[in-house]
Every structure is written in C-alpha cells, then in structure tokens.
Image 1 (tube, helix red, strand yellow):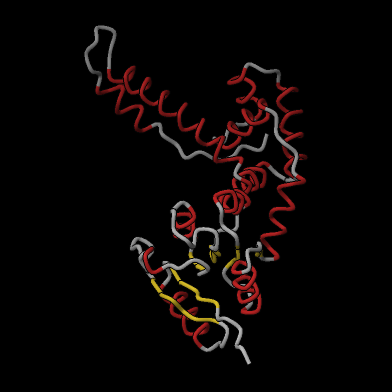
Image 2 (spheres, helix red, strand yellow):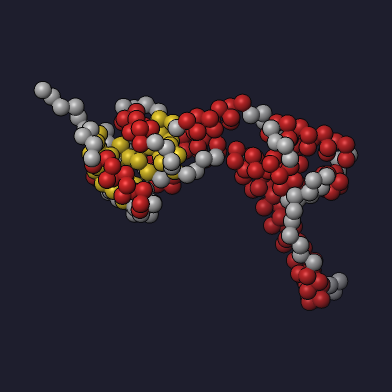
Length: 252
C-alpha cells in the first residue's frame, strides 16, 4: 500500500524558541518532514538551492516577505506566522504573495491545516486575520480633507487650532471630526488615531506630517539661528529649546 507523500516544511523564523518548537512538533508527525530550521531571519537558510518545488515554508513576517519576493521554488508556498495583526500588515503580506497568514497563539490544529492548505496551493488565514480583512472591506474611506484633519489630530491640535491651521471655519472642522469618528467607528479622538494606525491610514498621514515637520523644522532652525543681519543668535536658540513641550491629543 502506497504511503501518502510527506509535506516538506522549511522553518525560517527569527524567534529561536518558536523555530525550535515548530521543528520539534513537526518531526513527531508522520505526514510532515522538516527540511531545515533557522532562527536567524538575516541568514538565507536554508539556501535556496535546498528548496525544492513543492516544499512549504513557515516564516516570520519579514522573512516571509523576503522569500515571497525571491525567485525561489517556494515563493508560492509561504505561510507567515507572526504577531503582526494590523490590517495594513496583513494586506501587504497577502498582496506580496504570502499564501498563509496565522497569528502567534493559534492552535496546533490551525497551523497544521494551514500548512496542508498552503502546500495544496490554497489560501490559509486565521480567524482573527479573516476578521481584520472583513473590517477593512466594510470601512468607509476618508476624504482628503478628513485625512488633513486627522493629521492635525495626530499632532495633538484642538479644533480651534486645526481651523486656524487649515483656514476653515470652526463649525466645519467639528463636522469633519464627527465624520472621522463615525467612519472609523471611534468613540474618541485618541481611539480614532489608534484605529487609523491599525488600518494603515495613519502611516499614509504620518508620512505627510513628517515631511511637513522636517520642512518646518529646517525653516525654524534657520530663522532662529539668524538675526536680521545674518549672524547667529544663541539667545533665540536657547529660548526656543526651553519652550519645547510634549504634544497631547486635544479633545476640543
């Protein structure tokens, strides 16, 4: 009687305990074979020459993305096992070609079923991952103006200050803030920032904010260091340094 073929699994995970635990568990099972085990994601191990067509890889987030971008024979059979649970991170991994995505803490049954699904050319997603994707599908898109205001909220500005910065009426800002909270299903401005970060909205906003902050910072330093005749002014520099305060998220 022919024995069913075993699934050869390569483990490339940055956490040594997780890598060792996976290897020890899979070696006890008849239908799995451990092809290689590495706890260092910076090392290309197992070498791609050791990967065979049909082999499956379970990897941490960064290693999984690196392998999906490679031209190796396993790039279409990558299952990511990670703590990264944001919608943005999940979608990015799947867009890059990962075939499985499970969160650390999943059951052994889910892991084994996931490996079998990925090996068979199917998609394997954990329950929480599916929930995150469902949330992303039903979320409402923020308008450009709402993103501008969310950027200001992230910087800790109150409604009056946002109105001044963007040249809007205070009532208009309040209306946009209410729309942002509704679209993100958030009860407060702080929660809205947290949700936006989880969904990847904040990353896009933060890039714009950092760019603006860098430009403002360069201009400010230039004006502080120079007096009217172009010479440096240490007194202004000291006064500016003393006036720095931590930024808090304003509530009104």
